[in-house]
Image (cartoon, rainbow, N blue to C red; front, side):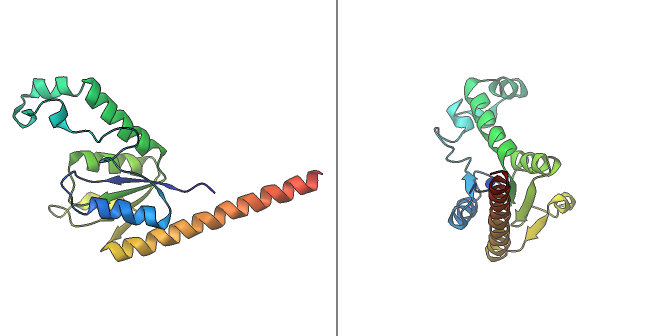
Length: 166
């Protein structure tokens, strides 16, 4: 059976992000962790320039084109495109919001958890807003179980078709 793929969109500074990644893995999902992506380290602007917080707009735009930035973007974007589920973990920044918007626009199943830095109307785009980790866990487990049932039904149907062809 193929596990559903989860993309967790959040901030590097969000202390809840690792717990969400861990929860998803414990349930049985395949999870992309932007802090620890497969076969590489997580992208950080300080890898390009320790003085990145003081960049001019031109320095920032140039940094977006560096091989490290392109590699980090490609890694995150490919995982986002391949995911089945996207979870936005607040508080989060611009990148996480853009990732979540991409997931919504692509028809991915979406969850929001946590409290944004301020009231935000557009979180209504998400399929579910979970009040806490327990609610997220319950909803994710239901989705995981439903996926297993659906995959088993498809496997049974294929086996039945193959038996009828013989």
